[in-house]
Image 1 (cartoon, helix red, strand yellow):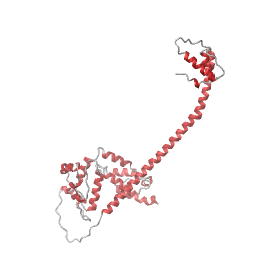
Image 2 (spheres, rainbow, N blue to C red):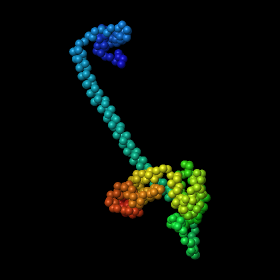
Image 3 (cartoon, helix red, strand yellow):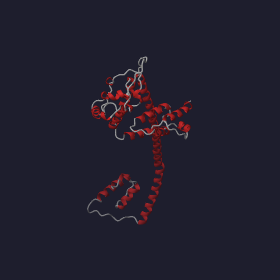
Image 4 (cartoon, one colour):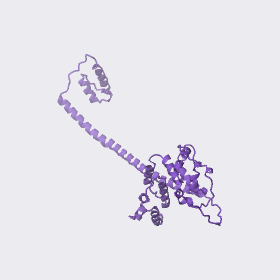
Length: 330
């Protein structure tokens, strides 16, 4: 390591000159110039270092004195600067953590608020699309032929009398491509269900005319695989099995388990959103497990009121919560 002459103090300059055979003057600049010349001579091939002018005892005393001064300076440095710097860093870290906590709460509240707004928006769209058809007097009760086994799988909704005029599916303008463009599969299926209700189309008709709902790769898939399904529900299951990403159920179930009720979120809306998320699962948990998940994520107010009561259905849990809702909202 090269000797930085400009950083040497007067006493240090005198020491460096003495050990090299130089004679210090009373001026620092002259001593520095003299030391530079002596250092140049040390690089010559025939240079011989002069005899060391100090004894071991003298060096020991000087080094001990220097160590004492350095110890004092170091302790003062630690006390004044490093402690201050440490306090500054700790304060900054605490502020950052506080901001992160605030941001986390803000994200949670924003997400709950968006869920609530999306739910209300969908309900509003559904209500706008429903146009009651004129009622006709019933003059007779036609006898319908018995349903075969495949038709029974469609569900009770297929046999209900619809109160709106039916609009053919090909006029909906709703298509699923299955290539990553346009709506996701779940969004598409939600739209189909809403439009079916508002356009007066039952599940039987949906299944029989589903060809008009697909285009691109999805239509090719439908042409090949539609024969595997015997009802609209079975077709939906095959669609989800094919077009949903890997581990979809696991990821969505994990998201459901982390979905807690917002501080200002009405109990009805929270239950509706949770049930909607459960309905998107290909293999939803049992209703008893759904009750456990929903109950665990309720606001502390409801948890305190419910206590250890054991409920086995989501409807019972909602009904029990609503008995305390008036108290909570007042």
